[in-house]
Image 1 (cartoon, rainbow over the protein chains, first blue to last red):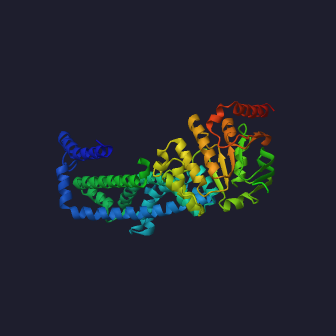
Image 2 (cartoon, rainbow over the protein chains, first blue to last red):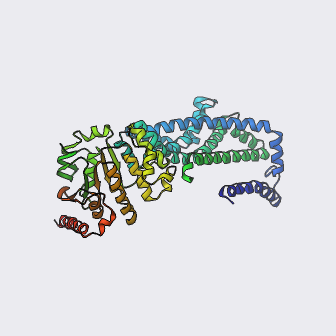
Image 3 (cartoon, each protein chain N blue to C red):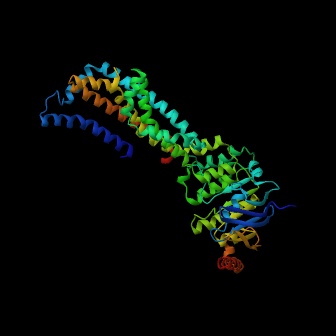
Length: 250
Length: 250
């Protein structure tokens, strides 16, 4: 069996096992369905209210993707600035370290007060959570460029543009992909948490209202959706990395 | 005719340390010079001056009647480091082609033809990590020569290779240079290698880095490895070794 089909077998096995273990837990624990609903009830809820779930999932994904896109754009631009103009780093680093270390759950209410119940607070929370890991990794990757290659480029009279595209950026790609693995899933977590505070839509909102009305079936439904989203994100990144770093397996 | 490379009272200090002091050396066009000496004697530093990777603290250095910086801008320099300066995500052919892409030089040599000549015809589409150390170094030399530079600088190019590969590469380099004559400077730790390849061996002494002796080597070319079994070769090696010991004891 090849490694790929072995890996898919593992995932398949897990997908089949989850409802079985779940049902076992329900039966053995004897907990009431309004505390621990079985997979049958949860899948029925998902089926009956699918358009509602889909809508809120879409809202959360939208917030996560927009925030994440901006985080990437800024992180990569600033990483390039850091590498080519170290004085920018000297100036910005203290700011970044302070912002990074304020827990984002503290920032979120302030953003809501300031910006109201628009999408902006959510974008900003997602941005804050994902910006720093991408920045740190891209900077490390650009700096990890092989000194011998840089010397060769210098002797060949390469311009900055050529050095960036042929040496620095290729060296940063593996680091960048490693950041995606963590940060892309983080963007969904951040979007959901941001929705806890103020939103009238999104998976976070669904969680809050389900809790208030003791709808355990909805809570478990959201959990399933979040798990599927997180896993698909992860698999997407892994697939993308395989494609971009094809040469490593050649 | 004026020498191809001229060093006049070349000195270089890194803080308190005098890496090079009052180096005077004339290298003729097409000549092969080997630089040898104990570690810390400034061999690599001297080479890096010719490549314009370092600037002299005092003294003068002329390459082809011009400053190293100007010669570099005219793409007249080729460089081979000990570690192959290859982009890991590019194939052998792409790595050699890169030199032409960057320099924009037109030459009768083609990357593909050069790799054929270097015995790498079947490995053009291989990535560096798929090649042995000796093969990587041949790709590296091809990448350094494909734009047909009149000056070829080599910093311990075979230092990381095993003894047999090293011998083969020595013979190989000698033949390549017979077909494509260049003014060559080779930094090496190996006396055998120096005697095998050089027209003159320059012995450097450390602290401060200075020229301690120059040995002429006038074996006819092409020099095959059988030369190593002859007593004249052994005597030359002995002569260089004695001079190196004197440096060590002084």
